Image (cartoon, rainbow, N blue to C red; front, side, top):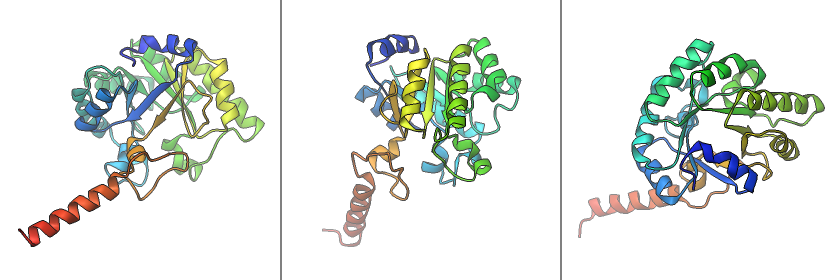
Amino acid sequence: MLSDLSELPQRKASGTKVSVLTAGDYPTARLLDEAGIDLILVGDSLGMVIHGLPDTTGVTMEMMVLHTAAVCRGVKRAPVIADLPFASYRTPEEAVANSKRLMDCGAAAVKLEGGVAMLPQVKAIIAAGIPFVGHIGMLPQSVKEEGGYKKKGKTSEQIDLLIADARALDEAGAVAIVLESMVADVATEITRLVHASTIGIGAGVGTDGQVLVTHDLLGSFPWFRPSFAKARADLAAETLRAAREYIETVRSPA
């Protein structure tokens, strides 16, 4: 189990994979922490699985502050990474100011989407003494621009861009980089090239760790589940069963 982000390089060197799950509320965060998860991500995916938004672009800083604070209150050990939401890091100054808001909630690091194009913001965050996690590959906050969720690394041009992004973030001082929805061989190669720990999601098993949306893991959001996400519980079915049993009990008390 990780208790500090400074332990990541040792984990990468030893080959021990890093486990990461998302949380947006106190009980989930507390349970994940007690289970021994390495890292907890307050991901902007909460916009969809908690707030019912169609994508992550409607998530606000106010939402992220609220959820990050709740998660941090539930955690005693696991470092918490908090997402900077859409349009919250348009300039280096804005990126730093909003990163500080998340750190004030108790986060151990912040994450934003993008590589080379976001270097001014990334460098400003790191220069402010804030641990930074990168995110390249498929970028959910760019879904409207790209016209959907598309796997990356299928062409030589895409591969070159992904490697350039990863190297730029690594050289800037990212402690970890999320590699989302990219060809597995490309993610494996990036993992070999960078010093930062790579955290894959829909990017094969060759990364230094894996992250999953907890709702997908628990089967508590049955209306959509990514093809790569294996549900290890069926909380949706259990919720329906318990609610229906309660309804019948109320209607027909013993």
